[in-house]
Length: 166
Image (cartoon, rainbow, N blue to C red):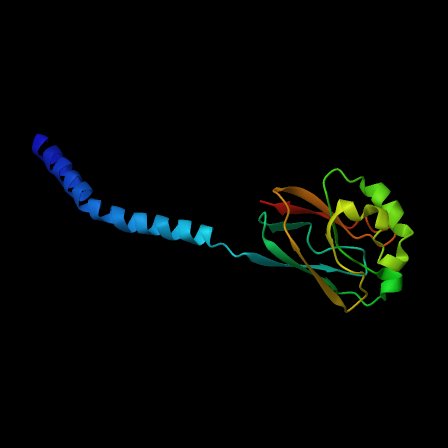
């Protein structure tokens, strides 16, 4: 028994000492991961769709702080923008969403973006109707969780999600 324990112990030591050469590839792999993280894309393309049932297909969008974001909204429905228009409005923290939505009702000529609230908006698309798409480019703000809504009258209560910046 003592001899077989010794053989197992010696074999384990042999494997460990032979395994020393593996630390270099592991280090190289770690360096590759760090390089990949450091060279993360400077931009990200995000897509979200809306429909004639007052819904976004996503409740969450993500980006990294300082990243250039291209946000594209697709309206997969058939109704016109006058009847069932949609946009995406990403709001700064602490914006009172019902107040914003009530002000948006009176901003038809500005795609339902109230001029008095421009300082509370990170980014927004224009209003589109069924079959249309639109995009907006912006720089992701500091890390945090931001609310996005559709500001077409009456839609903000059902059409909301979170924009997570890491």
